[in-house]
Image 1 (tube, rainbow, N blue to C red):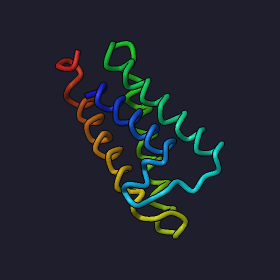
Image 2: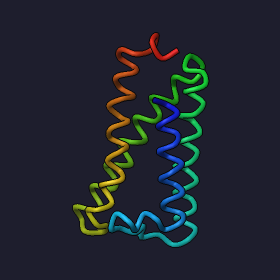
Image 3: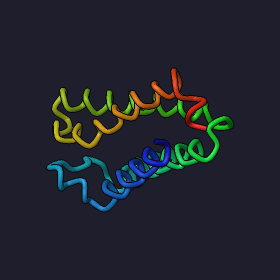
Length: 116
């Protein structure tokens, strides 16, 4: 699961950086530096999930960080969509983050021993 989460983040970072995110009918309303910073942090979180996949016991705190980051990121996008600053279509790819929030919670509650 954590390798899939890593790949999801890396794919999303590449899609935003390359402009391919426009295929879902949205764009990122950032200047070039802002877009690069956003993609950098998305990719760094992806690397964190990769590290969790390699060694769950040593990197379990990254799972909690991922839950918090994904909830806050989705909330930020949803709030901006409601306020009319971004298109609602931006929530479509970001909804993948909510799926991982539930999976990460499930892992913390039930799956620690089975994921090692």
